Length: 198
Image (tube, one colour):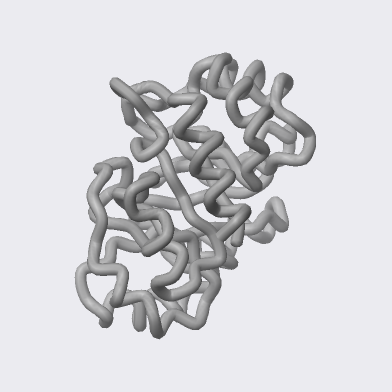
């Protein structure tokens, strides 16, 4: 099972993940308290361990903006949290050939059934708009056939349940590895250890 630590924006965050070595990290380019500028992302990426893939998180961003970050190597994948439709994803894919993660708000099992028709390479199943620190009913994901990242309210206290329910492709954390709004080295190390040993 893979692991993604999202919402990195401080130099220390990079130090922590370089020690923990998750599979993915996320840079948020959308409006958020964890938002990074392109310049920040470039500098942070330079310090990142080569074995960790970077995901750019966008909400209804111009295709050229995401494509530019992919082509320049600042990010490796895109994660789409807005109203991006199939035409948007097809155009971005044709420009870059990148892998895409489409975030889906899960309220009912019907949400997952609809989401599985997406052409995205992965789904990200979350509660609300993301970054809320709240979980949804993970039982709903059991029938999901498309590979997915499970997100929303995951932390050390429920990580085992998150991994066991629905067998996600990856676990995605942000606030669950923070203390007072910033990434916590010990929480990151513990979560990555738990997922690796899970």
